[in-house]
Image 1 (spheres, rainbow, N blue to C red):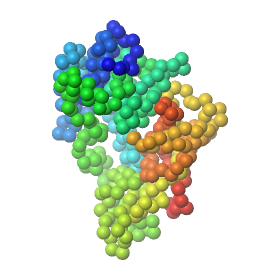
Image 2: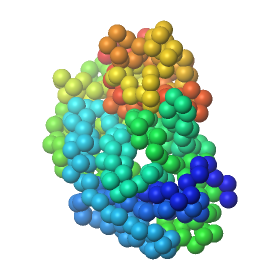
Image 3: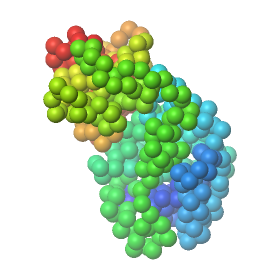
Image 4: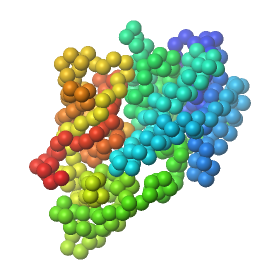
Length: 379
């Protein structure tokens, strides 16, 4: 069986065992390479309301470990998760932004408290079922895209510090998802048919707006057109994101075209949701500003020396690479100038940078600098 693993014979490797097929196959591959494999399952959310699958996932992890004959450790990080990830999640939505808590979960929990916990258990290496690859060099680890372009998870891993990556393995990063499924079925793993998890654990399959309303009180306001006409009411700016079409409740207006309405901006001080019809220029932009970035290792030399870097960027998961130029500002923030216009860029999301298959790091999107048309002067 092909593998991307180094020599790990007789080394103690702890696999972060989620209960899904990816971590199960990762554990199997580690075992077949002669590692002393133990599993570690973490619980990050404790509300048993029928949506979060934490209890079922723990049971699946137990069954996989029993089948493979490896010990399973279980640890509860719910307190750390609420403090380091969920609090940020709520603060960002309260500010009208669109956060991605999976990035923080990887940095603060999986490659933070869980990595340190694994070391206390005596692990030489931590392994996970991420679709990504690592290359260890004299200058430090490099994060590379997973072989499966539809499953590559480097977008969510870009903020992890280099130190944990020095002691990390991604056993399935060189495989396609279909190959992982085939391995699970051929070996007869008990969870080989388990569906992939989607979304954030604490949200599960529940209605997203309903979930947010539990923690963030509604703050109704006006929905306005670009001309200032009031055409509806929103229940709170935190419940909407740039480019959103569904759930606006403003279809079929008299003296209005049939084209769909989209959210194009939020006026926080006025508590106004701004909408436009069709593929309006305000849905697009040509440049953005980010917060101070997190680099995997050192800042790229050319950016440090010349304050300019030509590379590729993704502004959302599963987006194709977008060519751009990065310009470093005096305060460390970045201006990103895209070679082609970008649709529905949402502050609070991440811009993640690439040089070929290598993920360099990323930064939180703070605001749009320029639109793709003269419409930039409208708002």
